[in-house]
Image (cartoon, rainbow, N blue to C red; front, side, top):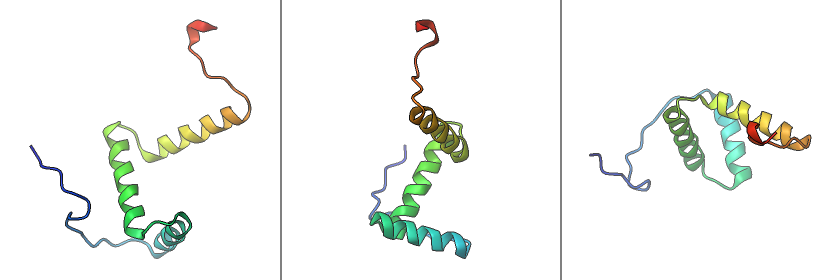
Length: 83
């Protein structure tokens, strides 16, 4: 069984990324008061969770957006057998 590695002591890797995406990540991390490293790690962790759910991040974001629209328009989500 793999032993968990603490985030602080985990080995780090260098990856290439498009500069426009990195610029946006830097902007977001500044707004949220996070480090770029922390934000990117969070993004990777969420991608891994999505993968473990057999879903893509796009599917999850789209479902969340749909849920928000439903909520903002007053929709109530309930079980079908209660209708």
